[in-house]
Length: 105
Image (cartoon, rainbow, N blue to C red; front, side, top):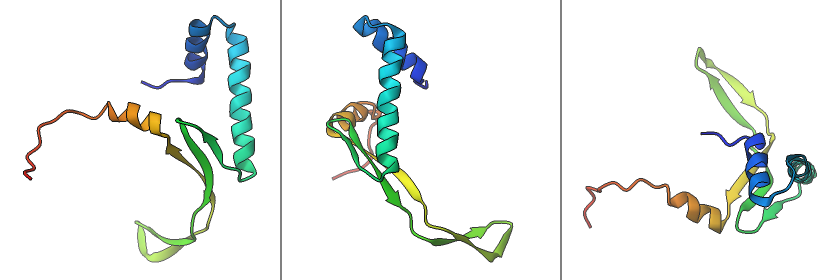
């Protein structure tokens, strides 16, 4: 299942009793501020949720599978990286499947 912005607004509205238009406005302003900060290469840290930051990839050489003899230069570029916070990691770890292991110690 995918949680869309619209579904997120509806859930927050139901939980808080706020009008959906108000929730949408606050959510959109929050996302706009995060985007603006990242566009300036600022790091965005949301405690216990995670950290967004801009990383520059290295220049590298790729290969075209159809013409492996030809090198394809891949330029450096800015990428947004996200590192999950402590609380989010703990919640996601709860989704780890419980399987029997054949590993012996």
